[in-house]
Length: 269
Image 1: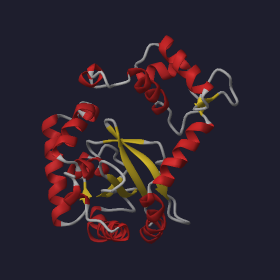
Image 2 (image 1 turned 135 degrees about the vertical axis):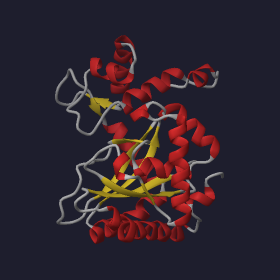
Image 3 (image 1 turned 120 degrees about the horizontal axis):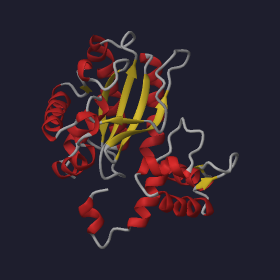
Image 4 (image 1 turned 45 degrees about the vertical axis):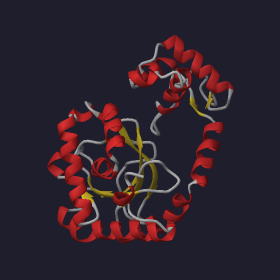
């Protein structure tokens, strides 16, 4: 956590630590023990033990099958569903993104900023086509991902600086590199409406992706819609000539449905 933020009298450190425990879980986990949570969060094991006991007592964690390992609980599921239902753009984007996934044969994604990484919160898989293994809950680095660069391009100056405090150092990201990534993304968004990160600098060699930011009125910062596939199925030329324009058009359709403008024009609101 940001040291300056922790010094703010309004900041509830215990609450922040409890939330960091919840964010430690990944979709591929078969439950986590206190030692594993402590390792992922950097918190002392004694602190983790108190937090997991409290979160289990409140229903945010459960010991459903193996009593030495925790899993997300029903209260967390209810909270997530309530949050999703309160954001109208999530439901509206579903049919649009599923149609795009089917039309392009790509895995379509909705990502949000989660501290110093991008978090996948929705996926739409193409029907009858094998797609990438990325799942809800997976986190992508800012540096070397089209989604991260698109977010950099859509963030206002203050939000960009705040994001850097958490993202710098991940995958070798420096302030100078982040500024370069941001300037390139802004140029791509202004000239073509979508962002493609150079595949030679992508964080994973087996993924090609194109991304477009979206600024929902209900949220204080942009989210990012992305289409990705294996390089053999999604060449740079295909991203540039077909999938990128289709993704940008889909996001524009969503903006019209929501009665609002693009993320670049809204980034300083």
